[in-house]
Image (cartoon, rainbow, N blue to C red; front, side, top):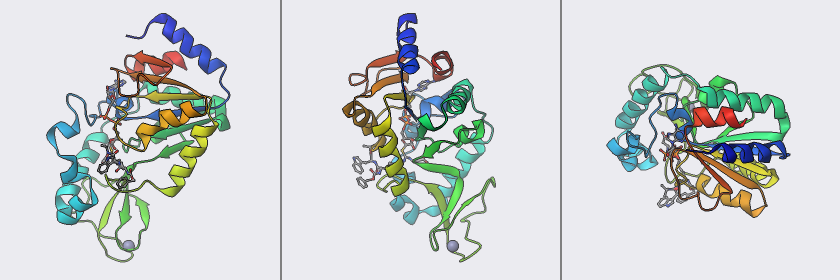
Length: 242
Ligand code: BV8
Ligand code: ZN
């Protein structure tokens, strides 16, 4: 558990920072009841990523992939942002253009909470993209019709999500690079630090001399690299810090 001194130290770092970048992962949404990927009740304990979250899986069996995403939509629709999401919104309103939030989460909870200075680098489960014409649209139907199709060109729709083996969007990569190089404090919240390119963001920030603080229930492959590793729940620690 994070100590009082560690929390004071983290608050001092924040007080003296000019530009803050935040990276979040499934751990922040775990406190809202959304399952993580690699935790004890994590999604990858029961499903194989390569069966469900790759372009090859979608080509092989789009129905199965859509069933999985429909199931996750159903689950996420019942969840609300928690105090950690809310604290990041407050931070954004105070810091305005000196703060940027990068999330790997596709559940949309940061947006629901009110975050606007945000890159959802792995996409958003509430958006669909046409495999024919590429048009992206918001869609909150649950369940979506079996094998949903585009209104414009009638091609199959897919979740607007970055799957394993797919590149992140150029615009997001550019923005991440910009805010990681400009920040003097990076706060990494609730991510196992395994999936690239996000897993490399802490070292980019370290390379430019930023202080890196991690909040996680447990130690991660990044813990040795960061300046301060705070152990505990995001919903308790993030509001305390900010
Ligand atoms: C890319 C979408 C260029 C599904 C996701 C070998 C072969 C092929 C590819 C690769 C390879 N080696 C490396 C790669 C690249 C690959 C990668 O990194 N693979 C890893 C697994 C080795 N990356 C890619 O393919 C990326 N694209 O690099 O493009 C390229 C192209 C081709 C080939 C090479 C390179 C695309 C990444 C795909 C991202 N999409 N899935 C969906 O969501 O529907 S990733 C998936 O993991 C999720 O989206 C999630 O966002 C992401 C990260 O997971 P976390 O958020 O960290 O969640 P996790 O469960 O792991 O951890 C939760 C943490 O929270 C834990 O640490 C826990 O302790 C903590 N926690 C829990 N509760 C709390 C808490 N902390 C605080 N409070 C709590 N209450
Ligand atoms: Zn279309």
